[in-house]
Length: 453
Image (tube, rainbow, N blue to C red):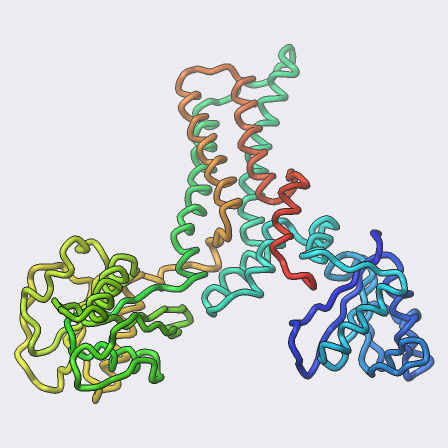
């Protein structure tokens, strides 16, 4: 068990409660030096794991606060070591003073992510599970939280481990055949061997398909409201988001800049951007607004092209060059009962009629926004999310190695060469799970964590 480390485990902001975490050698003894249980039979040194005691926190004879000490005994703790978590009032001064007492009594300050790093080193978490911890903390949508919790619960590790185990088995068959050439062993069935390699590669490629969802789940879907001035973009923005984010007037060109807000649709985060009406203008400020609107049109994941009864075919020319984008045509102000133009210039992903007087039409628009990205097709339970470039690179390299191996198998390559290539693919998967990873990589991964995690 390593030396005792300590850190404030809760946010560095005043709150009702705060937590100090200690982990490592003598962590219980160190906590017992300043935490005095109100019940003599509940001295924390005598507690079993998963037991708590209420008491006083003292700096010498000075009463600092009262609180609860929760004790975990190795190996049944988050880090796999003896752990004490002290819950007290969440004042920053109180928390910092308790942390100072911890260091005075023999603990040292924890480095970023050191608790989770110890959990990994002590076999409590795989590396992919450990990486997911930070994403769970930083999740901003229910969909992303659900996806990263699956990774934290081990789905990516299990998938990768299953593939690497099969490759190890195949490699073992080759090694046995090579090491005992005089034994009466059956020849390697190359056709079956190729089928198995192809099967494992397909499994890797299936996991890699989820790369396209990582950005959407983590950062949200960008939706730009675009159209000529005064078609009701700002009103729609406010209705979609459920709050007054954009100023609405009858004056053309009210919106001069890009206004941003977020809305959750079916658990997914959508970033909504209201833009200036796109038109020719001699006004310098309005021209700048139009430029920003066009830039947002270029970068958005989804474009809502807003029209009304005055919109003409030529107004759609701003979409030229972006035909491949996910564009939803929105007939706004539909309560005016105007004759809707049949805009045949472009192929739209969805066509929706809306009115600020019709709440159900706004709900239909939100559902259309959700449908365009086909987010309902994501299967969180069977297909793990890839959380970062390190994981993606390991999976891609392993898949590429197996692809090259399949080509080699068509060229009657020697079995010892096949074994070498297989071991390269296995090594990549072991780096993914953390079973074969350098200290430099580990330091880089955990340096991105907060101190108390």
